Image (cartoon, rainbow, N blue to C red; front, side):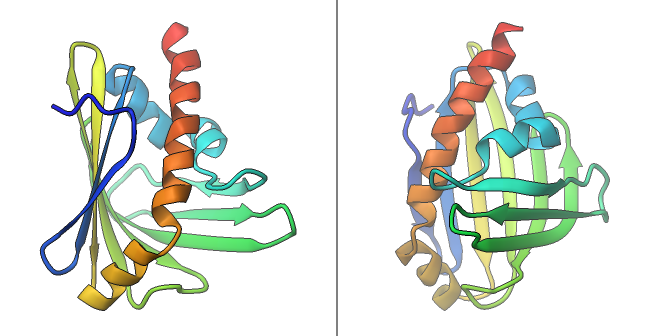
Length: 163
C-alpha cells in the first residue's frame, strides 16, 4: 500500500485515469466525507475561492446527483450523473457529465476505499468514452485542482476523526 500523502495519477489502458491518495482516517470517516453534503461542500472545491452552492447527492442505485460550483469571479460550473453502484463504505460508481463539457462524452467514475491500520487508501478510476477525452483531462488542471481538494479533505477528516 502506498504511504503517499500526495495524489498519484496514472493513465491506464486507452481510456482510464487511476488516482490514489492515502488519508490518515478510518474508511468509514472517509466514506462519510464523500456521502454527506455538509462535508463534501467543505473540500470538493478545486482552486482557492471556489464554493459549492449546490450539492445534491444520490444514495441509491439509479438516483441522480448534482454539483454546482461558483468561482471567485462569478464563474459557474455544473456536473451531474447517475449512481450505478453503491456499496458502503467501500465502493461507489457513477457517471459524470459537465454542463459545459470540456472533454467529449461521459465519464464513469469509481471510488474504492481500503483501510489498513486506521489509514484509508482511496483509489479513484475515471473511464472516458475515448482516448482523446482521457488525454484532454490529463492535460488539464484536473490533477492540480483535485490535489488541492484532497489536501482540504485531509483537514476535514482530521476534525471528523477527532469527534
